[in-house]
Every structure is written in C-alpha cells, then in structure tokens.
Length: 168
Length: 84
Image 1: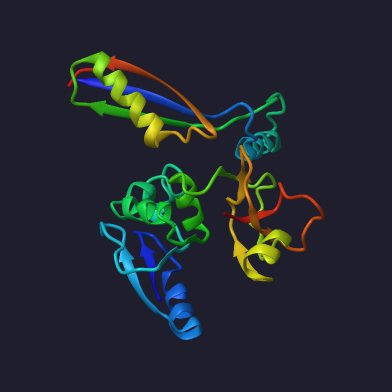
Image 2: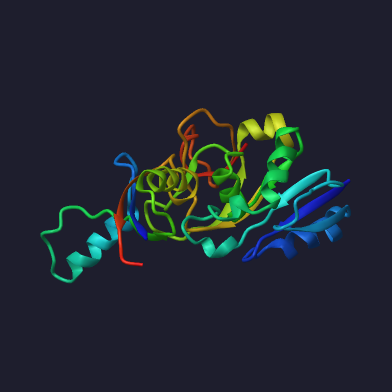
C-alpha cells in the first residue's frame, strides 16, 4: 500500500503524517505537490493540516482549485480513500467531497483536546479511535444528512449535531 | 476599464460570532447603541473588459465558484466604468 500526503503552500502537518506512515504504520508513502496533476500509484491520500494559501479568502477556498485537486476528486469519486485532517478537512469541504461548510466557533474559543470515534463509527468503521485536535474554525454547518465519525470528547449524549470533529 | 465592487456576506440564518465579538468590543469602548454587528468581505476587481454585460456574467461566475461559499454566503456586486 502506498499513501500520498498532499502538500500545498502553507501546509503544516505533512511531516507528522509522513512520520506516522513511515515509522508507525510502516507503509510506503510519498509527498504529492499541489501543482502535480496526477495521483497515480497511490492507494490512499491524506490532506494534512496547516494554512494552505494562508487561509486567504476562506480556509481551503484557494487550495481547492490547486491543479492536484482535479485528480484528488477523480480518485475519491472512483472509490479511493481520502482523509482530510484539519485544514485538509476544510479543503475537502470546499471541494464538495465532504458535506457542509465550516464556520467560526460560536464561543470564539480556540479549543484543543481530544475527540473520539462516534458510536456508529466504532460499530461500522474502525473501532474506538481517539485523536487530538485544536482549531478556531470547526463549527460544522451541515445542511443535510451526514455521517459523523468523530466528536469532541467527553461526548455529549445523543447530540450528533454538535461537537462534530469528523465526518464522512 | 471596468471595476467590480463585490460584497460577500454571511447568509442571515448563519450565526456570526466574529460580528458578536466586534459588537462586544464596541460596547467596551462605550458604544452601547450597537444592537447587532455582522462582518463581511468587500472586494474590488479591476477588469480589462469593455463589455459590461459580459463582465457581469463573468464576475457572477467568479462569485459562485470562488469568491463566496454558496453554502453559507450571499453576494452582491456592481460593475462601474472607471478611468484606466
């Protein structure tokens, strides 16, 4: 298996993902520059966090039109797995590969902490996973049905519309 | 030369914590008559086009594709003739 880690100008956590892929998961990986037009040879793609294009206009709005994104969209639509973390999540929302849009946190806090896989994700997808997060723009506005796979922990009971940290 | 002046604003149904925080800031400065504040974006594009109708169509497309996020934002713009 070979995983591609996308790099835009302003991407910040690509080296963290490369380290995990190489030293923790132990799989083959490569960086994919945002001006590349092909993702051939990769079995999965990761869009890391950071501030692609400085977060100018809207987070992910300009990155979404980088030359590589056409290939990423084709890859995803043909069933290729794509994960967007943090700014990567924002880019995937702007590209229409994830539903909804990201809004400023209503409290204007910059929360950081842990989030855990939702009950549905645990049962149907990948078991219990805990991931750390920190961001001022994570209030997800969803206009239609979406599967929530991560929520900020401790989890509010039965409230799937709030504290969303990850969607598919 | 043509110039497009574009306002991008959050849809009315979307909460604006940035606006709320600006209102609090104004209140702490003593401006207590501000009942609501909403913050948007203003952009000016200078266009090397001469046909206003064509420019209008292209600016509309720019707004729909990039300048505004249609899920949460509305936009309005004016096209004016300006001295080159």
